[in-house]
Image (cartoon, rainbow, N blue to C red; front, side, top):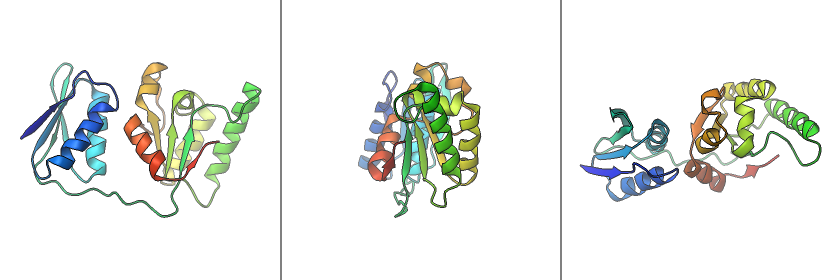
Length: 191
């Protein structure tokens, strides 16, 4: 059994170390130690995407173990040919008047719900996380997109920085490694 001690490391280091260890130690059991629940979930989500079925357990206050069983399967790694990603880095669309920019963003999200070709993912970073935590109109449209199969992901570090982690109302928390992975794997739309 191999163990990675990623306690004290900031996002996305635990995920990157885990991915490297899984690639190097195929077939061996792997335990990843982290010091917070968000990091544990990020490591587990990586494992799930790669076809493993890791299990999270809390060993003691402030220590979580994510265990990957020996001989886990290979990941999905496949992407649809016509898939794309929408990146929302602000609660406004464009530059200029703030209130008008917010109205434009709300209009964009509503229009997106009516498209025949939907994105595979919507990534919310920096102040874009306000769209998944504070803006009720945007939250309703993002929920409608989720219901149609779009995965809505908000940056965990951003949620923590702005003190909005507990206010997430739609989608899932993700990490910068996953955001980078998606933005470099799919065509990206940035309204």
